[in-house]
Length: 438
Image 1 (cartoon, helix red, strand yellow):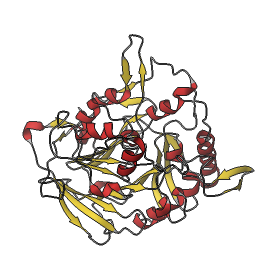
Image 2: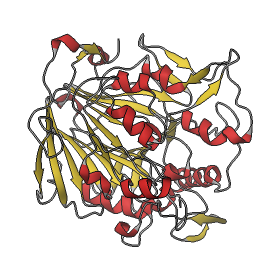
Image 3: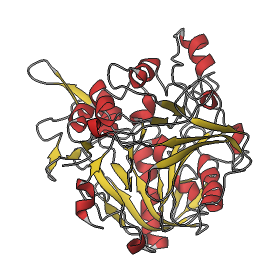
């Protein structure tokens, strides 16, 4: 891919049409049958509802595919704000995602790239939430997350923030759900029995995730790695290690530390830009008493996009600086429980004093009623797509050129039944030109 492509100007996105609850913003069509099959030349990104798992599936314009994360984490047992798992039809998240991918994927059960953003149960699985257990290679095998999915899906290449050294960049003790041990066991099995090469995610690379089938046909498509393992890409094309002068201390920080090591990327297709960075969020007190926010550091290095996946399930993440830097027309949250979609975060995403213009807030499940009843909170509703108040998949489809794109809400199963389609039309706004990366 031409590296100069990422130096092109990214224009501020505009919208046209109308939709209920969003006048003058998004053209909507309800009850539109089933999601059409992917067509060559389209970029399609599926944000899946999979109970207590985050999972994103991308089909590139030439048919090359990428699966990002598939976890399994029982959040809260019978807690009222637990994500309902009934739509999975009795399957674990790994099996459900596999079945969905096989139906959406033009190559069926073969996926070109696997990416684990970070080593947490809701992204990769664990030993305490699983559909079945058995013995493999003399070890107890838990069918959880990735370890369940691989019975049905094969990968061409694997990408990870640190493999084979889980203690890079610093040692992290495993948690009670034994997610680290589980993911490492799954990787060893994939290497031994599938011959899968799992390589380290290279921050700053624009050729590690690339089209494999017909790249010459789509020179304006690319994926740029912007963060991973505590390192971020800088505007000048270099990198910055956010943890270079910080030594994590104490087991209480282990969970948040892992989030801060998440891998992230920006997808570009013509005029269109999409941001996705796992659970990228960490913060700590500096010696001078101020707080360092990893999201603020990333905000200084990125520019505007059209669609952005919220970091860490929108649970008190997305600092004002990062919201302003990205300024998308569409936010998507991958929900794993009622702890996703904090009202304070939703309020920041909607705040016109941070950035102006219409926007749509989508979630694979926003627990509106439960947050009000269980948490006593005034749940944020401004700009939220009504389809988000029930479990749903969110699919972004971008035709060649990237001047328009659609946001499709699907039923939370693998029927591809459409609940609503919204079309977003970009418009060039010369007064708001900003470079994505310079």
